[in-house]
Image (cartoon, rainbow, N blue to C red; front, side, top):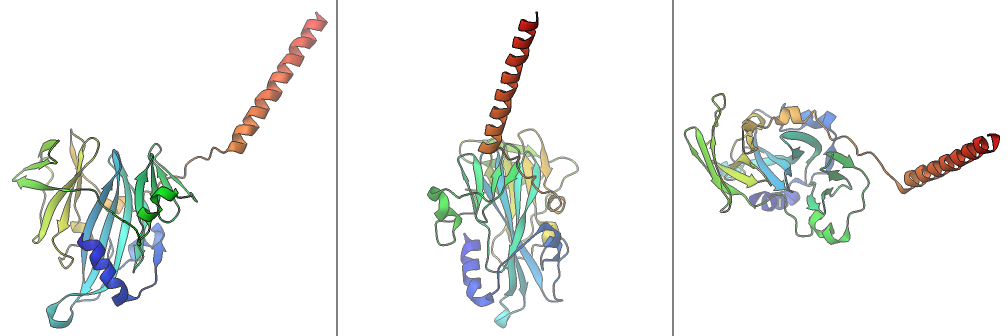
Length: 275
């Protein structure tokens, strides 16, 4: 995976402090919907998609590149945007820049994030300050066995038809009349399979390919229709916190029910004596 090897090499070169930015600052990154670049710099985006069951986390990894020695592009900054995907919707999780990254894994029905949060797909909603199970801690640490993408498969584009197969499931997808797909030079189409459906995306063949925010393409096919995901809108859509159900709340409810039962018995006994 060229992304991880490239980032490791850049850590010593950049020596940048970590920064995990809230959504309000997302548009101020060097690369994004409103890039802040020098006149000779450009952005190169690469999507990475990790699937749970019928959901996924999508990382848009970017490099801000400028002219370097002997014609080799030189990075001035690297970073990532993170989104949770479910049922055709994108939810913004935050972004990083410099040497820091957010890691994540799906375990026993929840997405665990390396910053101490977790996603419950049933909401979907966000849980804060979770204790990461010991069994998966290595998967959330750059020193461990980290992966930010699922197995992907090549996609064939033949005029207005997409064809993809993982050896078990195959889809032949007709493009809607109002949708066109442009595959820029030195990029390829890949796909990851959900429990039902597939996510199709453009991937640069190397980290020097110019591919800015507006050219990032991720398509969602739900076995009936095809749609393009809008990451600019996704930046404004965050997961709501999960409603807390604690042991203390359960205990209080049981106590109230018990008191209500005692009161009902006393009332019935009073009326029985009165009659």
